[in-house]
Length: 320
Image (cartoon, rainbow, N blue to C red):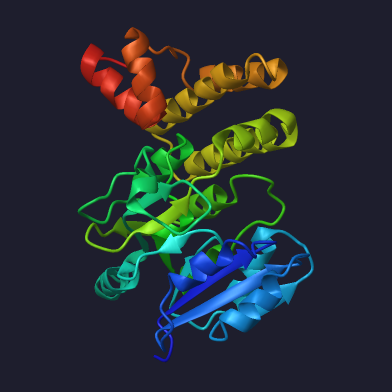
């Protein structure tokens, strides 16, 4: 095989940051680096042409990151695919263990591994690593419900940590360009609903995710009700799918209920109408909804996610 992995990088006006991303990647016959420029209006395209001649540079009119990723997937020649944002990085030993795992584990549609978040607008330094909840690594190949439960409950690993089989991405037809938010969540849940399985490797290089200002992201949700509605519509849709597939366990319903309970708490002042819709759906999924145990359990929910908070609460109180 001439190309093992295609790294697909959508970019838009990232002249100042994309160089850090491209410098973190290997330029050899095993790895194909595809950058899809999404109609940049700065010097991103010219910069890449001059500084990174080994990159396959594709261009499209400004149609959004999902369309750019799908364009890159259609052009990809690798057996495996990694989606990387144009301000994130991969460590030099990122590829070997992930490829080895997929070669040895034919039942797996993808494999994820270590990652860290870091702050700043320069190259990566260990001192810039910021604490965030980490998605659990597994020492076996779990059934699809394992990941579906966590994703429905708001626990995710970042997309660059995951290496896909290209055939699996074709099966689920790539990203949905109609979504304003949770495009990666939708893609992964469609894979779980198709009974695809995902393992992990612990001793591989990290994906390094640039930590954007959380206040900006929360603010964009606060001012964009359409995104909040899509978050709800997405979970409703997949809950119905998982019900049909026999995957909608009580753990999934409870974790999803606490996810929307947390959203209710977050938006009950800024978006009271949407917050009430979130609260009603959480109570529909889990009529006994409440976070018993006071501030300690609430803090665990914020730090570890609603699924883990549910598990811990059950261990503490001996009941749901």
